[in-house]
Image 1 (cartoon, rainbow, N blue to C red):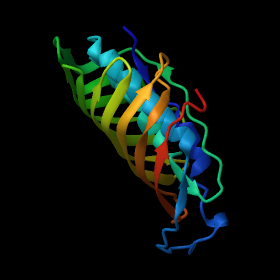
Image 2 (cartoon, rainbow, N blue to C red; image 1 turned 180 degrees about the vertical axis):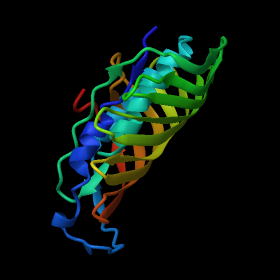
Image 3 (cartoon, one colour; image 1 turned 60 degrees about the vertical axis):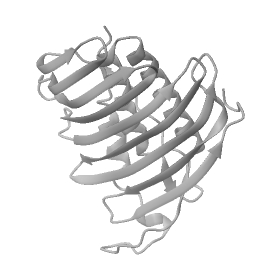
Length: 236
């Protein structure tokens, strides 16, 4: 059974905490939230992750599906940024052995209560549930942990999708924060998938998604963006 956790997200967050003021806005203690650009590449990747995790859950492996969904929290940091910015690179996933807490599954669901690894300093926990039945996958999960540098993260992923062999409909949301090098980055995002068709790799080839995302950097600069992205197979 694969046991994966996106612990490397804090490393990218450390590079992000200083971003923001050099692209405009109020700076200092301001509260201005300028419009940002939604990254189609990151949004497309999130759809593929949703497909992969849903297939994994429907296949009966809710634990691995929960770990795959953790990367949605990771990539949410790059869903929106300053107009004209390049999407942030996504983080890899670090293999970790489950050692602590409750990680209980039956034929159609899993329950997590501080399920994770308490190995210092790279400890993490998962709390919440994931269930699957008749092609419908519902998840309400919370991830928290830290790394060797002292960085910490806490984020949630909520998903309710219906998946077939070739399509996915439904929504996925993520919110959370990362504290790295004494500074904080937080985000809130939602993706509504509308009759998205995908290929054998889970890459979307048709249909559309509605994206609404915001990110707030330690410098007090924030960005928000909304967009509808229509897929035509480009990038697959």
